[in-house]
Image (cartoon, rainbow, N blue to C red; front, side, top):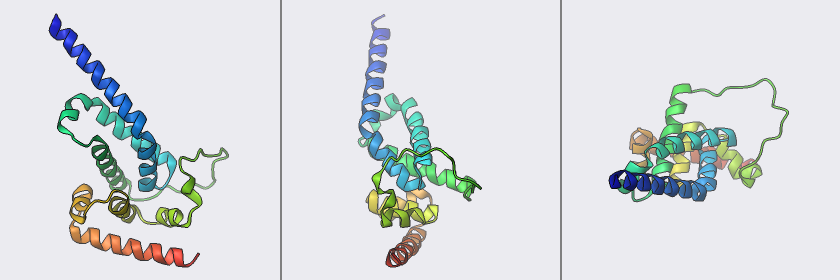
Length: 169
């Protein structure tokens, strides 16, 4: 009987710990997701999908993970790239929706943010992981399952595109 009570207490503590983690990290994860995906709706979907997966394994994963925020961010980058690889094209709509969209970030009208959204998904992911996350080329290559040379070329192309976009403003 005491073993069951101890297991329930441990599970409740893990659930409480995960809820606190989500409450603290959610705004930053939504901004990070927005930077990866280019829009708040896909960002919210990405964050929810990853947090569902991580939350279901939180109790078993937590002791092995020193940096849960870094783990979740890497999972988000991997999930975004996997989704991008499956679809490989944008879905265009004929008309914009009538309802206003709630903005998660006030940077939407900033020239750099607009230029970043204009990058192809892989280039955007490389730039976000390099300059937002501060990952090395090797870490980015591992996270995106591409070679270090591809990371370098995608970063170079993205920076040229960003410079040209910002010079034209």
